[in-house]
Structures are given as C-alpha cells and as structure tokens.
Length: 174
Image (cartoon, rainbow, N blue to C red):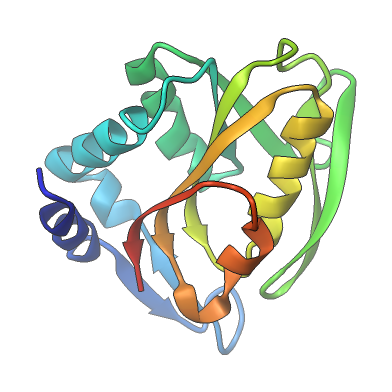
C-alpha cells in the first residue's frame, strides 16, 4: 500500500470530537479505524515494518492498542508505559506536560535488557510531552530508542520540536 493510500485510509476512519475532554480540544477518535479490519491491519503492518527492534513500547492507553499487535507482527516484546500507580513492580517515572494538563508516566525498571532496541508507538503526537517523557524513560532504563512512531502528528502543536534527535514516523501529518 502506498503512503498516500495509507494516509487516506487512516484519515477516512478518524472521527473528530470537538470539546473533548475539555472545551477547545478536538479529540481524534481512532475507534472507527480500529473497528475496520483492513485499516487496522494496514496500520499494524506499517508500524511493524519500520525497524528491527527487540521491544515495542505502547503509551497508555490507545498506544497499547496499536503497539501490541505491531510487536507481535515484528516478533518483538511489548512494554506498556502507564500512568503513575498502575504498574505492580519497581518502576521509573517521568513527569511531563501535555496539551491540557500534566501527568506522570512509569515503566517497569526491568522492562528492558541493556541495549534493547526500542520502537515507541502512540496514537497522536500533539505537544510531544508524552513522547519525550517516554523516550527519557526508555533511555533511563538502559535501552536504545530507535524511533517514535505515531498514527497521526498534529503538526500545528509542534510536538516534533520536543523530539529533536529522535527519529519520528507519523503515518499521517495534519
């Protein structure tokens, strides 16, 4: 499938929800894409084919949905990055700002072997805070971030600027 065909397939299956989760925010709802087997498979294949990696990180929560099947297809392990307090074992954490607040994310301290090659996957790159914090967590855990891949980059929010020095693969840029 060509990049333009993939882009059209994705864009046709993402619903804008105005004023969610708060006034002024336009939420990008990916559930129509996920319910379409052709679109979901195309996105999974695109992520899985980016790089040879040891682990694929999914960022809570929609990143889990995209990263887990990509990890399976790439024959790599899956590692969840979760909101603070959701992981049961010893963790590393990182605070960050996002487009409508702030948060803290965590990863298990032992999620990576030294030198693991890691692909980070999420649904949307907005201001870049979550992605940047995840890059820092993976590096602090002793692994190498090969790239960050997202379904959609919201270019007007300039999140790419917070990922300087990190390879970025958006499937769609709006």
